[in-house]
Amino acid sequence: MRKIAFFFVLLAAAFSAAAQETYLYAERDTCSLYMDVFRAAPGSQTSLDSLQKPTILYVFGGGFIGGKRTEPFIMNWFERLNSNGYTVVTIDYRLGMKGYKMGKGLRGAYQASDRFYESQQMGVEDLFAAISFINDNKEELGIDPANIVVAGSSAGAIIAQAAEYDIVSGRTEGLPEGFQFKGVMAFAGAVISVNGDPKYKSAPCPVLMLHGTADEAVAYTKYGAMGRGIWGSDYLAGHWAKKGFKGYCIYRFTGRTHDVAAYMNYLWDLEQPFLEKNVMQGIDRTVDATVDDPSLPGASWGQVSLDTMYRQ
Image (cartoon, rainbow, N blue to C red):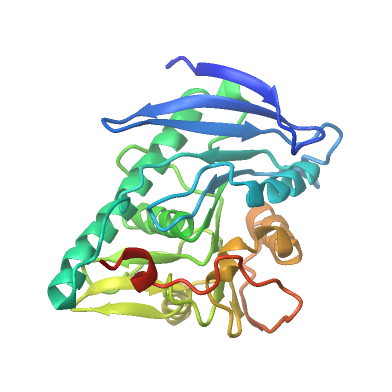
């Protein structure tokens, strides 16, 4: 069995009852990739009706150009999950768009589509490596690799959605044999493709999608041309409905922009029933709902788009 590269254990200041453990899970040519583990709080309910709660594996956002696995704004959500009996794993991945500037016109867009797709797939490869590390060290880590929900924000949500799409499409290199996520939670996610519309051969695992209808950074519907682009939550839900798939939940936030990517700690009332009913109990519960809630905050970054992030 591959030995765990254990670096340190410390009490995180943001957590009153959870220990943080950091592990090196993969070495790449350009960087080393680490994961942190935040354990369910002592005394919290780690099971429901004898069903063990899943581990939540979080993939951060940042447009494939920035971000980190322990962003300050996400810590309150980790603490909420821990206090509700969920262990959280948060991982690094390679940032494939870092330093990239899109050229102008159709040529620039065409070239950028390749770079976006490559960035997505690098993230998927790193996510699969994290799963493999957990599987190889499951006894030492105390984490069941067959009971993992992957959650992501923005670019991290794209990686999570693309990883599940690869699994149902049979592209599972780097994963333990027969692996499947117990669920996906995507905050402003999508699937990037350079080969036309994503077509699911079979139903995905339970998926929770939360997306602003006015998102200009990660397309809510779809964006692109000539079979290249990004296919968002609205497209995915429509495709699954046409295929007769069940067990997915989509919440469409009217008029909201990319701020939904930071709503993890505000939407526990939507996340909890998904985790308990769709994931743990295996209920084919399908929700398609529109949310118009003025009490939700706007994001500190304001409106962002491909132009503001990547144009020269």
